[in-house]
Image (cartoon, rainbow, N blue to C red; front, top):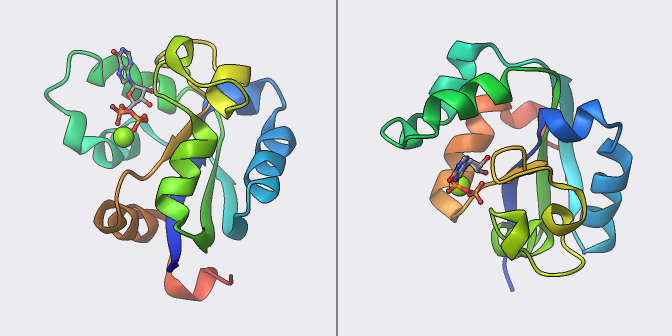
Length: 140
Ligand code: IDP
Ligand code: MG
């Protein structure tokens, strides 16, 4: 299997509730390694740029306001099939539909405030990682 990297964000709802350690533990026990990590607060413009692919969706404005409402933890996760593995550990977008034992099932507040972001494919992972990190900052 291929060693991959993926971009993960612990969203403001989870940081606000002091859940960053509990969430990182899910990734580590699920076989992924934190290869880069920083806590930051996104401006509205940065959130809009990051989620530009969703600009036409009805929830875009609310999503960007939420994502810039407080600190986030941005991280690169590394491991075998990391993109898919991260999505499995996160669970479905809507916590009401997320499988038992997933982060979103256990921690999400709503379909919007759903505690974590994860890249959805290898090419988007590469773009999202370079949005936040330089190669020098990533040590697997
Ligand atoms: P994903 O995070 O599981 O990849 P996407 O469809 O890429 O889901 O949506 C990006 C983010 O937009 C979601 O994580 C969630 O925060 C928000 N979102 C998605 N669908 C809805 C919705 O129907 N209402 C409100 N927010 C939504
Ligand atoms: Mg997505």
